[in-house]
Image (cartoon, one colour):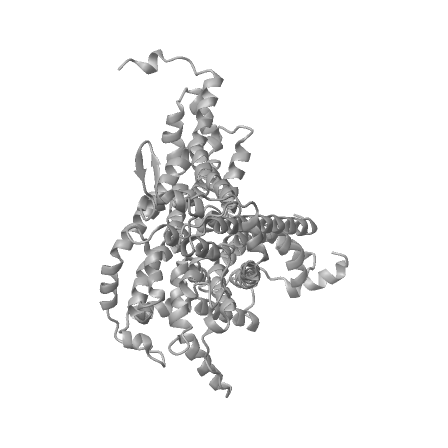
Length: 313
Length: 296
């Protein structure tokens, strides 16, 4: 134990001081490079080969096929349907959750008894594990014979002397039902972010608008909405990224069916890889999913930025 | 704004922001809010109610609302779900721990030792969230199936460690962003004073940055655990029997056992409620974490 504090050198020169701490970034950075960038480049690489685990070539090689996997994917109408499903699922969910989430945020922004409690209860559906959502909705709510929703619709119809025959919603309207399920999960997310956005609006701005004689609509349009755009931006961007990746809900409810009615890109990649063992085509589908996600995310950002400029801060 | 007399007329009639009048519309909107909340919560409520029913009651049409609650389902479900629970706990807490071990020093460096590249590094880390899991799953699956390193054979498929690796990837950007955001709220002057006194970097980190951002750490950890707990893509693709977490266990109820609704509900309640309660407790931080600090 040498008396370090007493004989210690004066504050170290700037150079040594600066170099060491910045290096603390590297473990995290390297980890992310190893687990996201490297596998992605491998995915791109694999996508140029014919490579099937279940049907290996005679000599076990993986012949280079250029863009064949992509051509196969993009010329097959079934695969175009998968891409379309992905877009409809994401777009439909986005519209429903934005409308419902914004309405709920506005409703919860009013002072009334029990509003903190309602807010707390409302976020629950976002926290439910997607797989649980799927099995509970599929069986206990939507089962045509024993499901609560099926029973309720029939009883509700009776009030208006309507005869409603319950159908198996997941077979009759598969994609719409999945959209409703996913919207149920993501509406609280939109509500929560939008409500926080509303509550960060300073009261004096509203009062100033009222003193200027703005009516409710003008107040909303020229004071609330411009302030709200950042929260809306966050909701749209994050929901787009996340709903494009919906998987558990589909896996545990329809398994992509009937046929390919509810197969989206993530589920399709899973089928290629684990059910068919098709490394080449699975990789190509994965690359397409990455491109689609990034194109949509950038498109959404552009769209939002253009509208933000009109609103102004 | 334009016509002064008009606004002058409206003030006494229109503005009473301090005490809103109890109007019919206001009452209607409140009732509507309660109604929508009830509808949204109903699927969860129905699941909880079914968990305490007998199988016959869970199935009955018209639905049974009044019944004597039983605990048998929970007993059976708990026994069966224990292995999956262990896997979920190990994967969720293990990955959260690893994400903090890697992420905290990075957040610290990015907050207090900023260089001209710091902003770029942060943005890049966030951009890894734009990488869907399907973009990396094929090579990961092949690597996890088995690889040789330094003469040893490694297999990560269907192991808890394999899940920890992927969940860490998922949560690391979140940890770095959130902790960076919390650490930048610590007054910088404290660190300047310490540096003048010659405090070494490790003391700045363990003695100041960590204790001062403790509330942020707990909020971020809560979120990371929730995300890892609920994850299903990597779970369903990378585990088969030994390391299957709760999401895989629950998905076995989709067919075959799909007729045991009360048992399924009990298992689902046991799976979902730890996370729901976590989320209720951390709702304020939830917003900040979900939006990567963009909305506070």
